[in-house]
Image 1 (cartoon, rainbow, N blue to C red):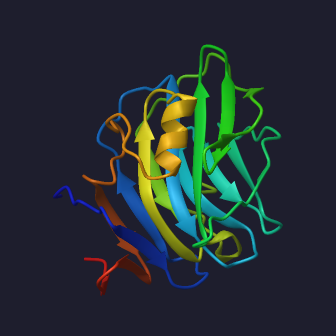
Image 2 (cartoon, one colour):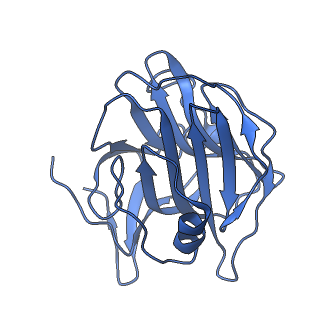
Length: 213
């Protein structure tokens, strides 16, 4: 499967359906003791929506970025959802930049909205993320690779999805939230991505709109 540069493009999820999703293929599948996940999205939907779902054979919610209908975001780690609720603070153009970080030595997990960090919580200290991951945009994996629900489906656009196997600094996350370049992504890289899709998902750019191939 070829690596595709998605710079300047976004996945567009047309409607709330359990069959609409994108599966991202990571560049590496080694065990991880830390992670940073970042993406940018645009949606006018006011229902619960899953942004990013990372599952392993042993845990369906190894990492989960989720937006509730009342406008709060959260990050779950290994099915543990700490009280990291941050409000949707959309930019004037309606986009929101979201990051989640976690590392095993302290168990610290933190959520970031448009470069602003939540308080830190400690969960899953000593955990190691192992097993072949399945990474899904737009649906919440209630089982490994499936059991999607239309009531949690994302509707809107998702772009600039990146993942690292270490924790980025506050300065790096802040810089990325305003579009500046940061250190190379070594798990998921929007500029060199492998993916498949299901259902009615489009790739949109500034100049054109086309079906995902």
